[in-house]
Image (cartoon, rainbow, N blue to C red):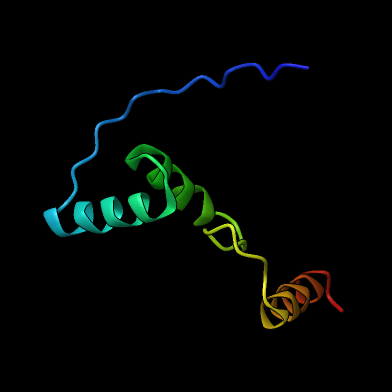
Length: 74
């Protein structure tokens, strides 16, 4: 089963030198392209999941459960 390619719309972005260097460093450390690093970080900003590929800690799981129970009114 093949995945259909996602439509990607180019969007120019202005970064400070310092931020660009931080993103470059993080991307290289994770073995990702600069673009992949930026997309991962943007997507992560909309979720409760950590940005790296590390498993959640017990404290993070408890916090996620607590937040979901609060949202559900329990």
